[in-house]
Image (cartoon, rainbow, N blue to C red; front, top):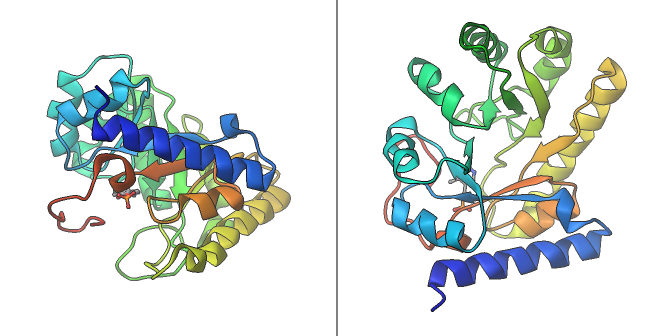
Length: 236
Ligand SMILES: *Cc1c(COP(=O)(O)O)cnc(C)c1O
């Protein structure tokens, strides 16, 4: 019997396909990341059994025991604020770090990657709404620091990531997604660097994000259900 979770997953994948169709894009250009934070390993197993292998977690303490219980062939995305004192543990276990939020964090990841013999894939988080409560580069600062970021030889910088200000409806998030894409285009033009990927869009607005060019959507509650509690310093 199909679980609620695998049914939800199928539904989200269908909605991704429709959004791609509307936007004249291929579904294969969009990677769905099933965000399993606050949900147990058994819930993750439901999406894995349904054939989905990309998972997102935002805190090392929670991710560690879960990753240990699940098959080794899964692709884990670290989507939360990076805890510097956990970086040594996080780097080897995660395929992609989505929220490198400053030049000093990027340098720390680079140094540790050197020591561990790794070449981590990262996104640079942009604080599009310039909110005090959120991490990320301010757009202007990022333009100034692009050359230094690309000089960090161990980092594979995939592109930009954002968590826009909360909005009452998905359509209101569109300008933030457009802003991230436009900023990416400016950086590519100014610095000549490749930034092919955009990590943007969550349960409430992933279709809008896809219409505006998202290549990685991070979807939690639309797959796993409503989260029972909110973690301090994290999104709900
Ligand atoms: C929790 C979280 C998500 C998923 O949120 P939903 O609204 O449940 O889809 C996506 N991105 C980040 C950074 C998160 O912390």
